Length: 307
Ligand SMILES: Nc1ncnc2c1ncn2[C@@H]1O[C@H](COP(=O)(O)OP(=O)(O)OP(=O)(O)O)[C@@H](O)[C@H]1O
Ligand SMILES: [Mg+2]
Image (cartoon, rainbow, N blue to C red):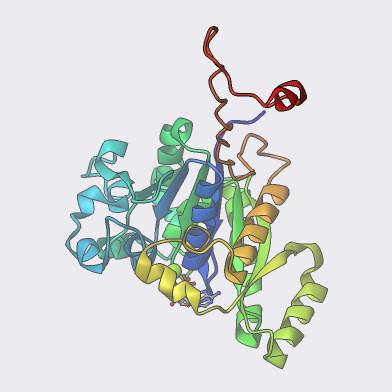
């Protein structure tokens, strides 16, 4: 059994395709099943960090970069876990937050930056005993921050909106993953394409979903995530959907997605908690036995007769 955490990166060069939402909602579901989840926010926009308490947009604006993921990239800072790792309001979820100061480390050519490329990988190794799942959010580009995330990762998941321009960018993600595999992380695997923000009533979405399934076959996950209004509500409540409203259709989609992530990573990671723990049922308390000598009112056929 492999007890190394499952390290999964959400990445695509395209903006607004649900990278952060995928991390946010799957994190909630991994945690609901009892896995200890670490979130690494590697996007200077810090959307993921702002989605979780104790952070919000103001707290992130005021965050000292030394107490954020920036410390993993700036060698003047101390990146010890006690400096940059925070418990969130959600049981089982910890976060290393991002902030705008991360922007200047997103170098366009990562391979020029020597050991800095391994900064996230070293951190993940350092804290690996404390977590079952590590999810890394990345910016909408294929530069240093995404590179370091992939160097640290076991798998990359790529959310894609089933539309023309989005589908065209996939080849760049493929090449980028191949470069990481060839130069720094031979164990990295592309888990696949997650079709996200699907509007089933929009004909073009069904057409493109089919085009992508035909073109990429097994690389496209069976599960997909529909466009749902409840995701905005979840962000404003700072609660992932399956913890917020576990019975709604959007939760069912995230549950199916997490099931598929377990399935697709089962070759390398077998020690994860795949079931939601059931509350222990209270056994009906037995009535105390009548003490010897106490008169017990019983109505037997014989005493009925006597009466
Ligand atoms: N399945 C969905 N249904 C409805 N809204 C969604 C869904 N997925 C994402 N969104 C919303 O779309 C917007 C963009 O999503 P998100 O931030 O997850 O994308 P992103 O790829 O991380 O964006 P960026 O490239 O800016 O980092 C957000 O407002 C989010 O709440
Ligand atoms: Mg994002």
